Amino acid sequence: MRKPLIAGNWKMNNNVSDSLKFAATLSVELKAAGQIDVVMAPPFTALYSMGVALSDTEFKLAGQNLFWEDSGAFTGEVSGEFLAEIGCTYVIVGHSERRQYFGETNETVNKRLMAAIRHGLIPIMCVGENLAQRENGDTWQIIEEQLTDGLRGIDLRTVAHFVIAYEPVWAIGTGKTASPDEASGVHDSIRNYLKERYGDETAGKIRLIYGGSVTPANSRELITRENIDGALVGGASLDPKKFADIVRSAH
Ligand code: 13P
Image 1 (cartoon, protein in one colour):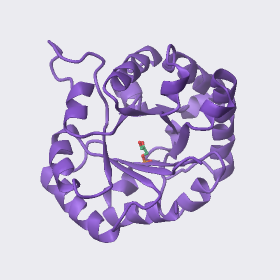
Image 2 (tube, helix red, strand yellow):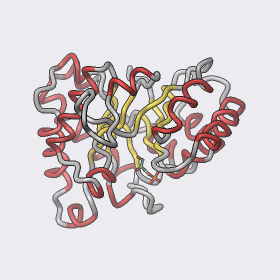
Image 3 (cartoon, protein in one colour):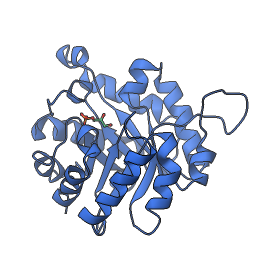
Image 4 (spheres, protein in one colour):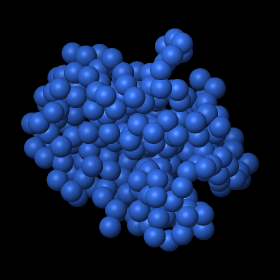
């Protein structure tokens, strides 16, 4: 069966000292990850010190983004090689905030996924529709395009390790969670799409997690759905107690 995964995307929050306080509290709150993959995505500047602070734990780290080249004259960018070197296991790719504010497209998502694969990082690939697209009835068309173009050229064996996060843009940071039925409806469609594209065995291995206003109050009813294998948590992941509660709700 698929191992549940709970990831905290801190976005542009928590400097190094905040991050170290978080790590200390989390280790008290949550003695072990147990049967859950617990992942944190701090800002780049805090990744190294978080890696040191968490080195004796089972908690894993993710970058929030990566560039598709490995090194060179790309001012301001961070490569997959650098993330892997400091102990990241995962990397978030194609978050809607990257798409909205930084010109991310399905094509650049694909290039970043290729770079993640090259460096042995497990991508957490984000897909999701915005409010206008949902209201137009275009939800599935948008997600299918994001999957088709984003996953272009990625083979069966590689994609089996991927994590795909369904994050409806209208639910991010708004307090409006997709209902368990709405979320699991999309997750079911994603699973079916993956089955058609890659076959049942591979599709059955890919973890599909939900993101968008997940809290300790709503996580359980989302995560217990058949095709919701965990959560990508923004705001609530900044509080180690809430984050630990969400992890516990996945047991
Ligand atoms: P919120 O949990 O704050 O809605 O953010 C979700 C998100 O974007 C995680 O990547």
